[in-house]
Image (cartoon, rainbow over all chains, first blue to last red; front, side, top):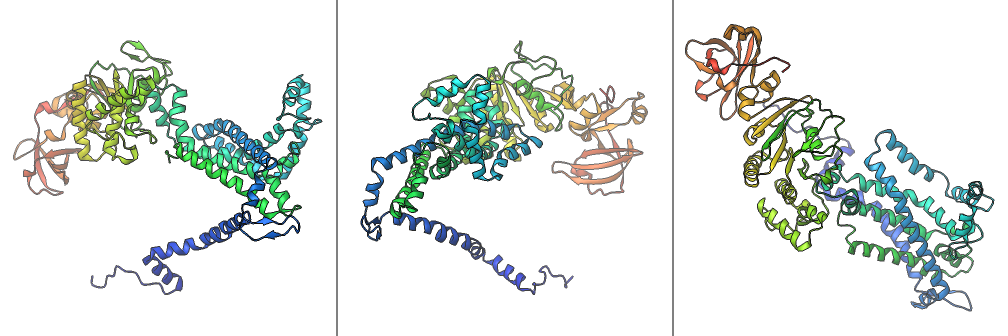
Amino acid sequence: MADTTVIGAASSGWAGKVSDALWRRPTLFLLLLLAPPALWLGVIYLGSLFALLAQSFFSIDEFSGLIKYELTLKTYRELLIPANLDIIVRTTSMAAAVTLASAIIAFPIAYFAARYARGRWKALFYLGVMLPLWSSYLVKVYAWKLILAKEGILNWLFGKLHLTWVLEALLSVPVIGGNSLSVSYTGTFLVFVYVWLPFMVLPMQAALERVPASYLEASADLGAIPFQTFRNVVFPLALPGIIAGSIFTFSLTLGDYIIPQIIGSSRLFIGQAVYAHQGTAGNIPLAAAFTVVPVVIMGFYLWMAKRKGAFDAL
Amino acid sequence: MAVDRVDMAVEEGEFFAMLGPSGSGKTTCLRLIAGFEQPSEGAIEIFGEAVAGVPPYRRQVNTVFQDYALFPHLSVTDNVAYGLMIKGVAKSERVQAAEEALEMVRLPGYGSRKPSQLSGGQRQRVALARALVNKPKVLLLDEPLGALDLKLREDMQEELKALQRALGITFIFVTHDQGEALSMADRVAVFNEGRVMQVGTPREVYHKPNTEFVAGFVGSSNVLPETFVEKLTGTAALASLRPETIKVVKKGGHEAEVLGTSFTGAATKLVLRLGDVQLNALVDHEVGDLKAGDKIRVNWTPGSVHLMGGAGG
């Protein structure tokens, strides 16, 4: 038995040699694996973001229209004039309303998918949620413009059901009303909710999927009626998923400039303001200052969520 | 998922075990009592009250789950006090009750931890405290010791038994471990394929199994075929012969061939062949070195052969 060896022959190829060397140095292996994406994220992604943010601390010369490369807070003073504050408040309120509505609509869908859907039903759920994401965003938005127009199918349906008065009552409400749904904030809101809903459903479903049925049974066993179980067990455990979803719906709404341009009143949202200032107006510093707003709002939102214990269940 | 024609009554203050292999319907039975499942027919009564259609949150029954089902986002204290919080007990009062319950399961001072910071045995105790703090009329335990290692399991068996005696609450205990059921329970119901095969004290079930299944499952008894039993006793019926009742003798008895031996710690297990009957025997180590092929003589007292009603029960 003396000729028995336990160590196989070293591979002669370079791939084998590299494998052996890397196996002995796991840290180096990890470093090699992480370096390209870290560079991409760090330099190209975050780097360009910081370059953009830095622009907001420069200002524009009123006479020549050229950027003065001196650090100043002048642009931020300009950002905070009433007309611009209006834009910020309008966009933030819309984002909050869209997020809240998405969460309310998404929860039953996500709960059904996580708790009851199996096999075919689960496939149907994924298809139903993802299918709208496969078609072009612009096509969907223009389709909605037709649906919501005065001559559109929705008006026609309300007419057939003799409910035109409901629609008219809604449209006569100040702020959210207007001439027709397609030129009102209500219309903008409906399209935002439609377009971003999948981004709320999926993380919510993933979070609910991780709540075993025995937790719900244990809660009922300890005397909790279903609503108490929802409030004390399901909701806190789903909260990280809800927060993740709301980050999507909130920040996507904050930054969007196409939907409010096609559907809604002509008043600007943050995204449109950025678009206008960096384009025709050529005011890059102010455009950059506007992009800082969503970043600050999201940062504040996450900080609040953490303080309220939203991530305790993670 | 199916239980069929299960008919049994659990006495107040009793430690009752439901024993059976997986899929035998014992857990379904427990879930019917807890209210997680609804019977399609038949009746369940708890202290004389029919509970059909009564949701789990209205039953004065609490459960210790197999996976413990502790709420991961709540501290140990909040977990234990959960039932009291739902009932609307004031905070200071329920925190105190939770601490007392934790002392009872010998985990004082663990209240501020999260379930993820506890070991399996500690989680099991917290689950127990969480159920007992509500002072249930019946405590249901679904394989509560299944996930623990042997030493811890034996300690917990003793503790559960002592706790049950002290509190006087009815315990209904589901297990697939016959040793656990026999050592802990006042009475045992043996389940197979959705039916109760036998209900009795551990001694009855062990010494007087009524079917081939019970004989085999509880203490893996030898089931003697009818022809062999007829030669021994004059009655043609199946009979059970416990492995530990078989003794190795110098003369008399029956001639047997050793097919195999294994060391089990406390005893030596022999696989024997008597004519065309194969038997397991559990004997002292003094039999010395036996090996496959050896011819020996074995005997047992006539009382060890327990006649069973029939294969079907």
